[in-house]
Picture 1: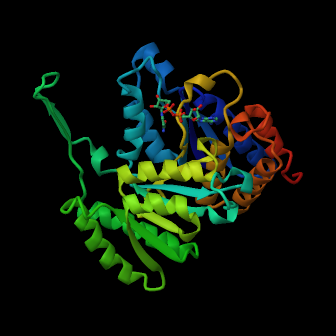
Picture 2: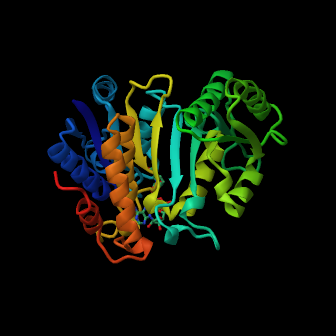
Length: 354
Ligand SMILES: NC(=O)c1ccc[n+]([C@@H]2O[C@H](COP(=O)([O-])OP(=O)(O)OC[C@H]3O[C@@H](n4cnc5c(N)ncnc54)[C@H](O)[C@@H]3O)[C@@H](O)[C@H]2O)c1
């Protein structure tokens, strides 16, 4: 039995997560996958109601009992300080040391690829984003705030251990999944101290994977090449900030935020809980309209099946999602006319009877 914590979160989060839960429940009922779905009341509503963000007992239970967390999105204008989002997201990413944010970037249909002359076969790569350090580590401060002499600093934290483990995770993934090439991206020509460490680590780790074609691109060149010819990429590894940016560029290449899925995990501890999240945010303007695209969340469920060892279910689900998208059975962001629920119905209708 796999226990899965379900957190809808804010905005469209609960709407898309409800569709993910429908699909999880379908596979539990029809394919015999033993899942214990644990619904958690966390997010802005809860925070505004009683001040709760991410209680210690919940955090401990997730760590001790759960195989996965499925999280919608966090972000609500009524909580401008992001207190709840910070506690919940960082509580898991940092608290469980989920140092690899893994973003498969695969276009499901030719029509989703925005580049002239390119088709779905050209967009199929995976980004490994370092998830626990870099410029998001929270080290910094402000001096003389609000004065003309103000100083604002955030430090870019790169540890030997942190860089080495994410670079190795990218190579290991490439080897395990038959990927030919790993690109490491940094800005070592400008950030000569911090990113020279990435260069040295990359030069060492690549020797352990002689069969993998190891390449380097500065982050500016990577962005240029991703748009010019995405087909040259298999696996990309980079730091937290660059990964954040490059994965949104990747989302655009695969058809938009409505179809971008992610998992945060600790490759050195595969038994540890894994965090599955659609890449998009809470999309406040879409709330309640029934137009939020559930595909990113459904792809998260497919990724969850894959990561938890239910390979057949993962393939069945991803195949059905792709078929629905190719048939144009989509929400308006992908030029379709179906509702959030209607898209899930179109996916479920493609499963073999069971
Ligand atoms: N991981 C997270 O929880 C996360 C990520 C990004 C943003 N946020 C938060 O979400 C809030 C809104 O941020 P934003 O507007 O910059 O980003 P967003 O991802 O919510 O929206 C960006 C654009 O994409 C569209 N979009 C997003 N998801 C979609 C979906 N499933 N279907 C159809 N269209 C979709 C939106 O309508 C909007 O036009 C903010 O509070 C932000 O902090 C949270």
